[in-house]
Length: 338
Image (tube, rainbow, N blue to C red; front, side, top):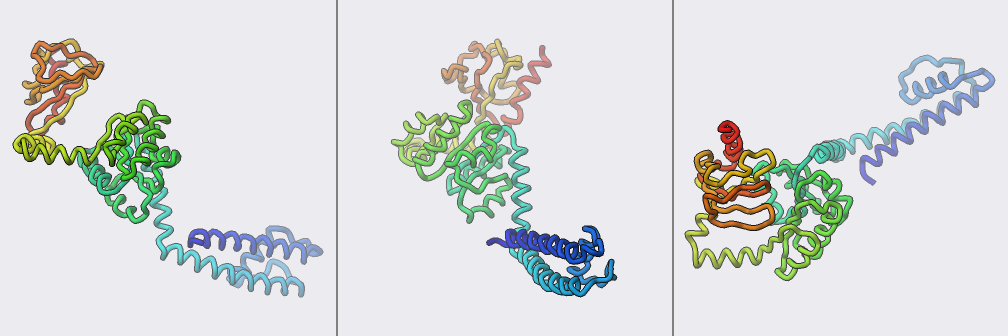
């Protein structure tokens, strides 16, 4: 039994002693017309041993009852006090407050990413997302990782991500994406299937420990599948055969001197209907549009300057660091020009 449960039990026992004591006085002193208020008052001053005067002249039976109330009361109060000290010393009281605070933080999340699994890959992904300012909720069942998850600064749920209730607690119905990085392909398939069933529109990125699991994850509803083994093997081959390209991509990925970013053309964007040439993307952002991904999924690499931009298209841009912070200037500049 935890200290919190012992303290709750002690409070219930103290309340029971109070009610039983008051009832006893009312029954014993019924002939004197002792009411509930006086009986409760007599019980309280007896339990607290404050020494106030008796509200009525006690009979012999009432005095014997008072001895019993004092005996049981002292034992109960001592137990309650000890449970309270144990609750404070054990840290359970702080833990309860932290859980309440964590629940409020989870409830306030909106348009966030749910990360299932805080192992080696999950921790690295969480830190990367945090550095990029992405709202995050982490799920892991390993109690030993609580402190590490707390240091991340993002709300977390201690529980099994394969259980529907756990992902719902993490705000599944308000999230914009779910990432599952558990080392078990079976668990990742189950989590993906659960998330896709509850939220068919949710973006789900799943880890595949074995390349053969990629097809299963896709069928379960994964939007993207990441296989660390395949990715690592490809990078080794690229480092050996195209080292300069690898350095270029890594530099761009860090967003220091060079950055690769994307820009989604939304309904109110003045870019809709304009050609790439007329949009003056490079002039406004310093970035070059290296590709256009059409709303239907078609990818146009090295697009023609006369390519017309449409609603739902995504521009892939490469330019100096800070491209992402200047993407909205495309709209602003074109609105001003209009």
